[in-house]
Length: 275
Image (cartoon, rainbow, N blue to C red; front, side, top):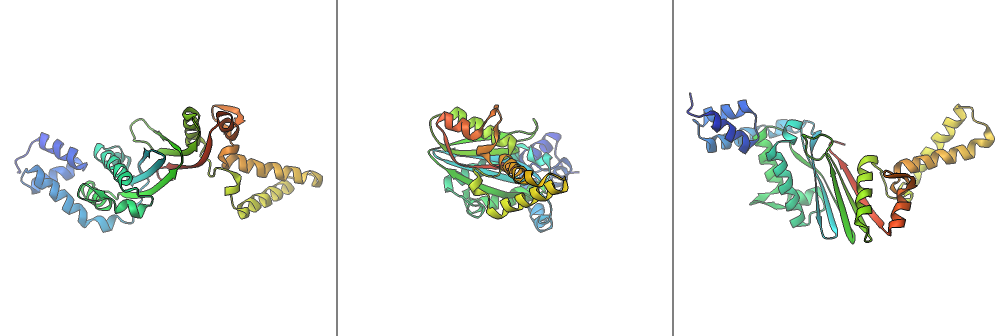
């Protein structure tokens, strides 16, 4: 039997993020040498990378960075919540966030090519996936720019890293209102900033559905235009940020709150892990 202790197993788990049995097996192969066991885990894992390609990555974390008037939002995905909350995975996410800012990477492709500790972000992810035995992928990268950017990260569970992230790019001096709007976006998930961003085909589809539904319900012919318009406006109110009721005061729209605060939002982005 290999010469190693429970402390060695613990140390290897902390360094690798791998499971206990995998760590014990690696220490057996390495005759108790933690460094060799770590290398064994990495090499063994690399052989399984192709097999993991088809797996689903529905867990992970969201990272945000703000550098002056530029905001970066990143989703790093994995297979299980066990890995998502591991210190090593979280540290990888933070390091990737820093690397993306340093490289000013605004796409996944550019982010994967960014330098990170003597290798690329893509190589670092591959190495981490090999050690922990799960598929890990950089799923999304988004960048927004304006005079200022507010970032908000939300934990859906206390024992998990942030699962929802929001960036709001804006001009104006009321940073508190901008942050409140970022929190609102996290909760109410609008899809666009204003109704002009919704393509006409989508609006026409909503209008047709509203008319067909009203007719099926037996609404009077004379009332149809008003009913249809009301339902289409309801669609806008559900999806358009500036037209949503503000979370902290539902008697005002988000647009009105921003106007009163002298804040103009130029863009926003919202990520939810796995969505």
